[in-house]
Length: 115
Image 1 (cartoon, helix red, strand yellow):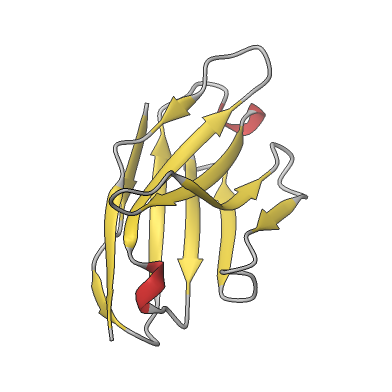
Image 2 (image 1 turned 120 degrees about the horizontal axis):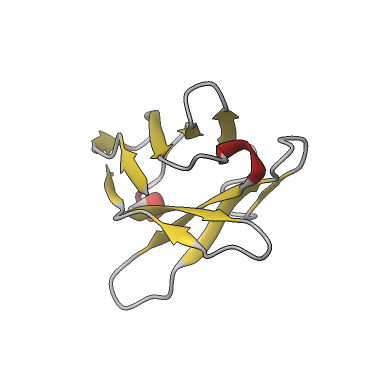
């Protein structure tokens, strides 16, 4: 249901934009989040966006550097990442959630930031 793309190997200080295409018939009714995970660690919430698109939240580690957004006409959620740091390395997952509905996860996309 969710397909992430855009992961890559980039140098520290670089920029990258991740995309999450959601094949959900009621795309605009879902809230979306980006998580990242590194080996041996739990999945960490990076950014989230409400179903109405008005409310965003970010982890302290990415605040001011990452921006989550959505395009309802394209059924796509984005994560714009700038000033990337080696500690941003990980597999990034997209999640769609709506009260009373199953939670959907993508398969993940790898982001590697070299120092």
